[in-house]
Length: 438
Image 1 (cartoon, rainbow, N blue to C red):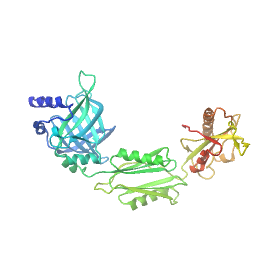
Image 2: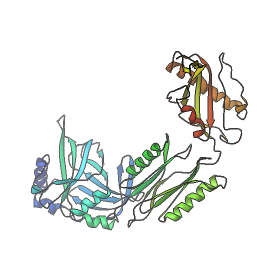
Image 3: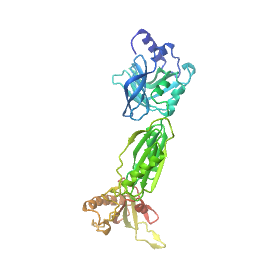
Image 4: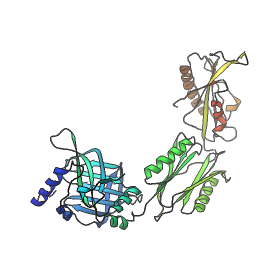
């Protein structure tokens, strides 16, 4: 705060009451606050490691500034508190609130849901607190426009070992108009698409209040559909539809987006077909955000590198052991037991899945000899050498899991189509199934 006697006395009064849940705010406090005004240029802040920057509106109380920012990259709304008081911000926690009535002494704090990123000043004279506003947060600020609002935070007081809870207050009157001037008065919803590169397994999300929520939901959906390594491909905000087309035979895929579902579907079909040697992709899907008065904004879009015969194949490893459990089939002792596992990361062979390169049966026999197999004839010597390393490693893992196993051979089956190899993971065919981390 500035050092004038009036303001110093006021600051002392406010700070002496900050730890209380509710406290009266002197009328002079509101008089000290500047009206909310639009500011020229861009205001900047750091939120979860990323810079947000854009048009903003601000209010001040002495040297402390509260701004609402519309991020030019995402279209999302952010609150930024620049605190220049002698409070030593910690990075423990912070939250924003607004009172549900005009008098703080008889009103309750309504907390915003927004998470906070806290950046203390190194010299201990305050710092910045940045929060990403959800649609419900914006609605809350609009509902209680005119009331006192503030930010609560943990501080490290000089000479004290523990943390104290403090608050700093601003006049909320005018924030609804500021939100409207920035175009943040209309709720913005986010949608996302996540895809597993190896086989096109995907997941959608739509109508989420934040980018982070949309990305997490799409990734979870992709995993629930069987994806082990799902990447975010597209994040949108606004009244957008996302369409997704894929082909299970070639594992290629394509997506499209538009305010019109039909246009999005056409674009996805075009993108997938041109990557599928001009063959129509058989699997189609689409999803749309709720209609809203907001522009469509591409928050993030990854390149689509899928192509037919793209060189990525799924693999199942098998170690063939003696019948170490004396298993019988209809009373007859069987010859041996397989210990099988799915390779966690797909193999990357040029042309994997195309004719002559859809299966690789290289057996690691006793004595360290790699049997030449006609099924592996389409693979190069370098590719076989890489596979041999995997087979030797897997042999050791399998026998560690089942020490009684005396391995007769180790083999690998690969295919661009996941279902062509995963039948080997059915336990009913005298198999032991184990998990591996490679």
